[in-house]
View 1 (cartoon, rainbow, N blue to C red):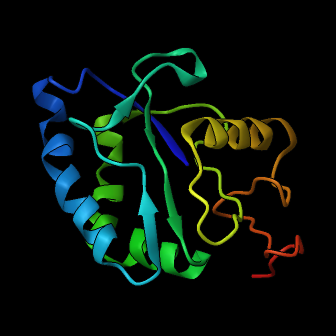
View 2 (view 1 turned 90 degrees about the vertical axis):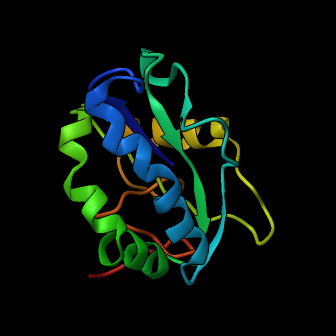
Amino acid sequence: MNVALPAAPLEAPMMSGFVRAIDDVNWLADKSPGFVWRLPPQDGPVTFGPLGDDRVIVTLSVWTDFGALQQYVYRTGHALFMQRRTRWFLPVGGFTTAMWWIADGERPSVEDGLGRLGHLRLHGPTPNAFSLRRQFDPEGAAERR
């Protein structure tokens, strides 16, 4: 689960690079080793009012393991997208990404993700919800770096 607050409405010229890249970034994910599922696309990114702002964009995906996600996020064309994120998104206080383990075949809902993100923001990284910097294995043990 990841949430982001756009710097302008998605229709604004300054957001065009982000909007144009969505399909390519999703295609990269779909073709990446370890990718399992993502929130089905609509007519653009999912936006609604979690965190008290109806401009918030939500992404939700399932990966086989953290290494596969990390490879996609930081070592594919998605990395360029990440480098440009400050052009398109405003800083949001607290955690914006939450991760957790699920059973094979399970597909989390946006509500599940927001609950986990809320837990992470309230309690910090735990086996229930953890961050990119501090993960837990499926048995709940803290991963060592």
